[in-house]
Image 1: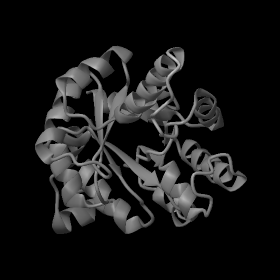
Image 2: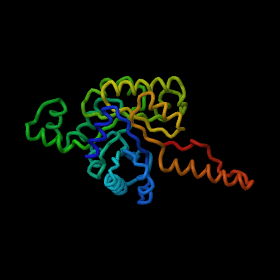
Image 3: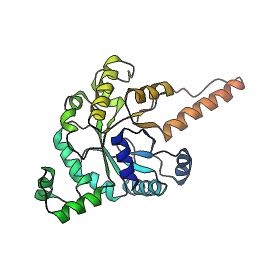
Image 4: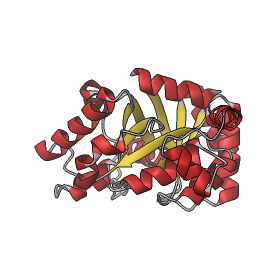
Length: 271
């Protein structure tokens, strides 16, 4: 029950570490697994991965005791349910701002297979009956629900968004959040850091995980952990290749007296 263990660690404030992967390849699994991440973050929102590829990735990483967490393309109950059917153990839904979105997701992730009126009763706190209550709890105990917080309206609604017991963690999307706050990609801006601190504090006070996906340097990432994050998505497979390849080819060219032809900045790719 690796999903359940991850959720328990998040709620207990234990730090968990992972990376983003968008590469459906056995070679990439072999490259990531030796780092012993607690989870992998499979991002379908900004990447062209089809359902078959995501299913293969989820089941392969889970077989390695690495929790597959999938960010779906929108906060949709049917999409969340089908992604769990494909093998995901965690669902991240992007750009959450309303309780209706949270209700749809907690029904799909934590109360499957109930639907319709029965689901509405359960979301309202009513017991269906002892047999069904036990069945629903046992069936969904390995599923993890994480909300992407990426805007000021979401921050304003945090107390309500964190109220449902099914929410395991909040995850900051730093790029979208910085843009929404009017300081695009200014990750040291006081407004951005204050918003991040508020999200971390609210999540941890409520006994939920607090996370961020960040691809900056070690100093920046450790700062977020010191601020209260206990879920860190470090970089991504494509970014790690991009940065290391550019740095190493640049070093070789420099050693040989050739001009650096990469023409790429360090962080011009956003995930």
